[in-house]
Image (tube, rainbow, N blue to C red; front, side, top):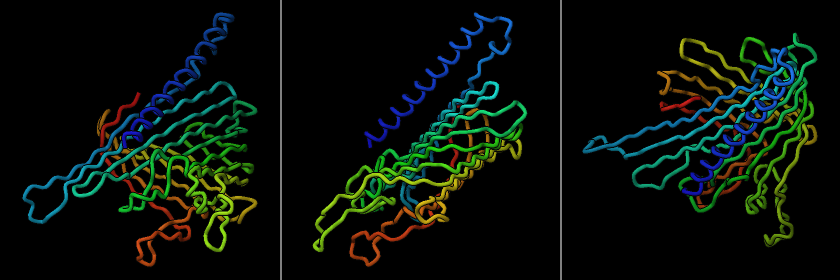
Length: 330
């Protein structure tokens, strides 16, 4: 657990430092331009905008002589977000990083992970004139997790790890960006998706869609499983946020992907929706859902009750979140 916390803090520090360096270089360039041509008012502008978010949600239940019974428990969710966006004339460059890690400690059992995410996104676009809302765009994204995932209460055999899986998307297409509403729709007919399973044991089992190991009749491995799976397909994403009531914001992120070469028409879905309610500048409440479906993600469960996990087919993944905590934005 100490390693995962250190890794989480290291990622926050590294991303923040890198983003600050980008901003410094951009400011230095515009300053140099200003010295050369003081009549150009556009050169006086700083084209970078930034947003940093650090937050922590806590919940606690304690019992003393409570005749209805219950177990003492504490849950914590730590998260951080960084946005660095550049916009000048006909060019737009958006960058974001999201880190989330949650734990639950309950009396009489081990500490369990409740949330785990490392996500990076970057998109670059340009448009033909200042009146168009359509951009020629290229986009890159990466996501994985920090620590091992388990099928609790079994904590001996991990079912996922750092970079097992890890996903990258790289593609080009067109993006519609609304000038007033916070809405962006991205269409990419050429997107490469890479799935990494760097743990050999999980790769041998063919988890997350990679090619499994080849074995003989006795189960001995003849050829190790592949650690990388590549796909070429069509990607559609949508990002929307709006203040629906005073101090109540709605955000919606949807991603749809289908591989041209393998079962075209099977759609990988990643859909997040959240409602954020502002109590004051430092306290916020949020409720949200996260839905995933990937035909390549198989699930493990003890089907016959023998204590061993068998691999079954893909399923709809659903996560619901409700939290109140402290948030600091700058």
